[in-house]
Image (cartoon, rainbow, N blue to C red; front, top):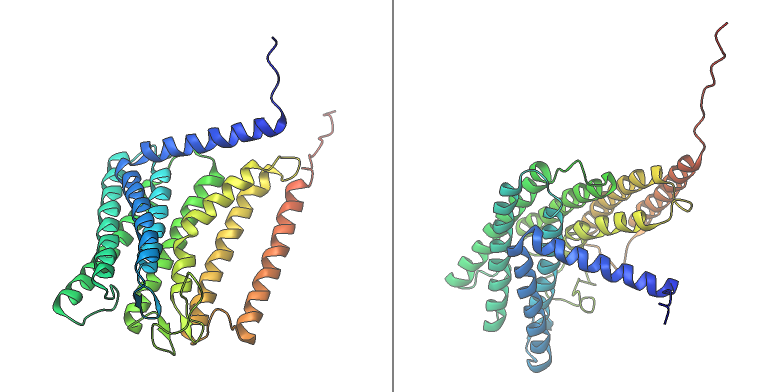
Length: 322
């Protein structure tokens, strides 16, 4: 029998599966330690989910195992993103391997302490109730600083490969830069003595995330900034997948850069909102005005970029020499 041609839907599914398999292979090749840490973090996510079901203890007004679940998931995704980025590296592989190990070990220590403290039924962050609690919190602070420095080194000196599409390269560098600034919000939390501003930690908060609904919460900006590492490269992948007749090739890089700038402004806005003791769910007029201006500016700039990308390139016709 003749082989039946695949339908467009089947072809699309095949391309998605092939793309996912290619990314997974790249992640494992990019840095095995980061990959296997992410796998272990996935196992911890499952363990924490089970803990939510079988353990009804509450800490600071939230289920005890919710925080370990969120941190395991967040660090696991972070490690996968870094491993994929390292798979794109041409030069500096040895340095990238060392830095990847530093991030993997530091992340394992961070998540491990959070789980250990949850098992004890005590806080992991900003906990100096006993000598052991203070020591563990100090270790967490040092590991985060080391992870930040290693990530900064990766962003500045390692992730450079001329063969990679400039749209992808730009999204990675912008994502890492914003993520580093998002990490620095954790320093603001340490100076503040907690994540809440204007209220005590542990009050009423949003479901799942736990962000305060009674006062400012620096965890919002911290979360949003950290995950620029995934959001911006994902945006680049989406832009590259759009057909040229819909989105001009020349508009893609400017759009990624625009998204990076907008993301940075959003990070600043969320930090400013939290520092004024304002819940994410109750923005005041000033916050809404800045957000509105940001949306309008980004929308207008995006339209201009796309229109310029579609505009025909004028060519100067020289008159024949006489």
